[in-house]
Amino acid sequence: MKRFCVLTNDLQFAAANKHQERKMQVSKFLPKQKDFLNEMRSLKVPIIHLQLIVSENDPRSQGIEDEQKFTKGSKGAEILREVWEESDLIVEKPKDSGFFNTNLDDLLKKLNITDVIITGMQTQICVQTTAADAYFRGYKVLVPSDGVVSTRPDDTNRALEWMAGYCAKVMTLKEILEFVKSENSL
Image 1 (cartoon, rainbow, N blue to C red):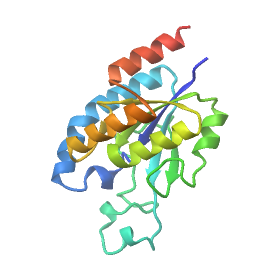
Image 2 (cartoon, one colour):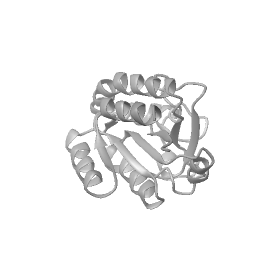
Image 3 (cartoon, one colour):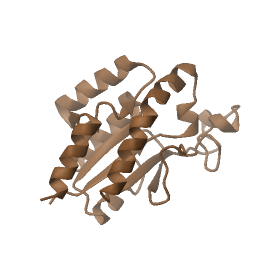
Image 4 (cartoon, one colour):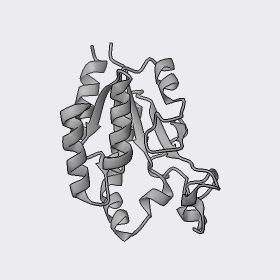
């Protein structure tokens, strides 16, 4: 039997508010993402937020305001309120992939997860590397074409095309929701 999990990438204050162009793309993305996550929660599908956390010594932390940092406890590192629920889990990650130097694989195995639904931002970086690493570990990977976001839509389209040809099944949020419902009813 399939057991699903949703992984969100970098749905954090600093990532969502990096600059005006990013804010615009995220504002279009967030309402659908929020609805999708709520639907998944209603189906008892675990939600795991992959949260980028870097050290104070990391060059990305130097000379910038708290709202732009990805350091533990900073405003910038906070998971967006629009997508966060108390029942959700968080896995801190030091790099782009949710599997690199984290306990994500162990957690997924503990939860008996067979299929991961990878959402969030940036499609061509964190979503793509997490999808490939999930595939390498034997998970079935689903990526919602309208559940990922990048600053530039062309970056999203290229990444979705690459993932569809290599490591993931790319579907819409609605198609994934229907697929999960049909599998859960078996």
